Image (cartoon, rainbow, N blue to C red; front, side):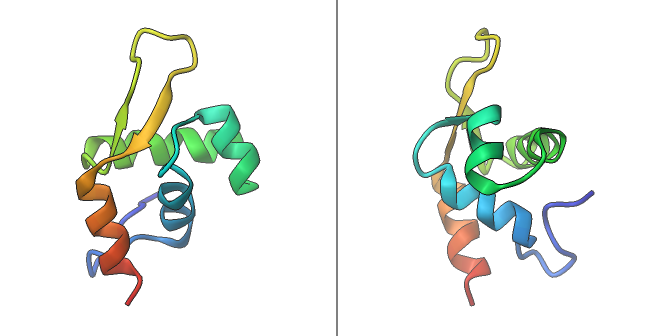
Amino acid sequence: MACINPDGTLTEVAKRSLTLLAVPHTAARLAEAAGLPLWRVRATLRETGRAKLITCLDPDAPDPSWQLTELGVEALELSQD
């Protein structure tokens, strides 16, 4: 399940998730806010984290918070066109 389309834009799920991550969220809170299943949110966090679009604020926490990075802001802006 890709979060980035072949043309480099974000998928709808990734856009929704990254938009909400302008404010830090845990995976559970993000799933609730986005109206998505937790497994889908975790997969999105994994992939967008690897792409450096988001960052984990406390990797040692049982359910860490995630936040949008500057690169994530740029990806969102490019995907709005």
